[in-house]
Length: 201
Image (cartoon, rainbow, N blue to C red; front, side):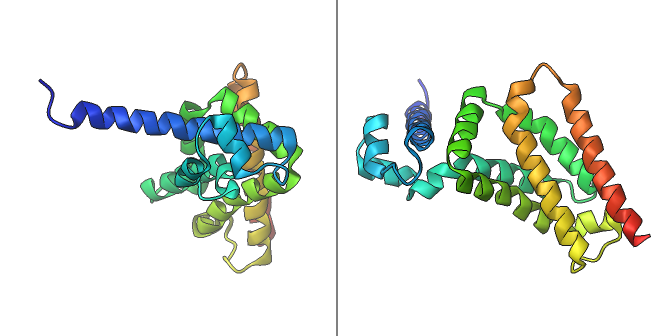
């Protein structure tokens, strides 16, 4: 006999996770098909076969649905930075990208891509999530370039790295048959960082 609450608790969590995912994907699909502004919480609720109040229990606003994938990706990068305090910036990015493949849901990433292409403003916001994380790790990035955090080029470099990572994450699911692409991305980022270091030297 299982301990009280063990099985039922895990079952409830699975049901909640499944419902959350249905709401998210329904919302993203509608954003892609009808536009972010043309979609309401009520529309999402109908598509996910739940009540509008249920949608808002999982996602307080449409904005939370639209940026949920970007927020999760950025959170995992933040965790990687915190969990490897002695590693260099690119080493952390390398570790994070390798682990990110575990979360690479092709359907979800395709939905994200379609949503962002239909709503360029969302694409910009999604990219800024990773740029913000890179900014948080700017001290570690600065250690590799020699640039001070308040140096203008440091902000430019962080923005470029963040945008490059956002683009790669967005298209990686399309190129699963090209594992070498990961190494090429790291090489490009290394070249970018080396170029910034050269301006300091």
